[in-house]
Image (cartoon, rainbow, N blue to C red; front, side, top):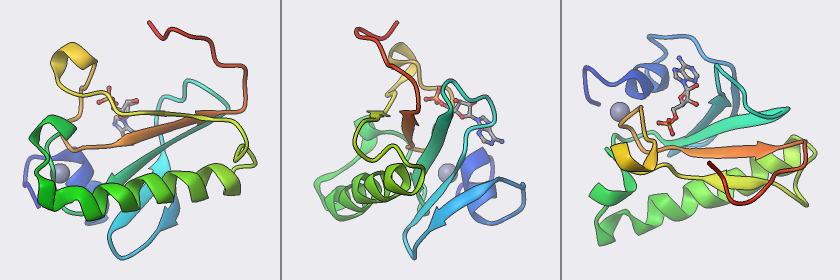
Length: 114
Ligand code: AMP
Ligand code: ZN
């Protein structure tokens, strides 16, 4: 837990969130500013700043985040077609520095992203 981390505070239920999926290691909740009909954030419950800061030992929890994203997409009815985005670092568009995967779906998604 990082005291100043918004998503750690959501994990600890200090800040409310619309939680849609949860396991021992992973939490998923709706993005407060949705960019698609389905827009859910999937995070490890333990603080990890970004994918750039991940170590080889984080492979297990990162795999769990990916599989949770699959389950969230299925539960949202977009399991056959969705996008998983992990913005990494300031240049990668990351604004909250607790690793998270965006699950986006429910509309036609174009490529490349902006
Ligand atoms: P990123 O730019 O990849 O770091 O994504 C951070 C995301 O967190 C943005 O899409 C925000 O809309 C979202 N966000 C920020 N604060 C909250 C919150 N309190 N609850 C849910 N989502 C949030
Ligand atoms: Zn955190």
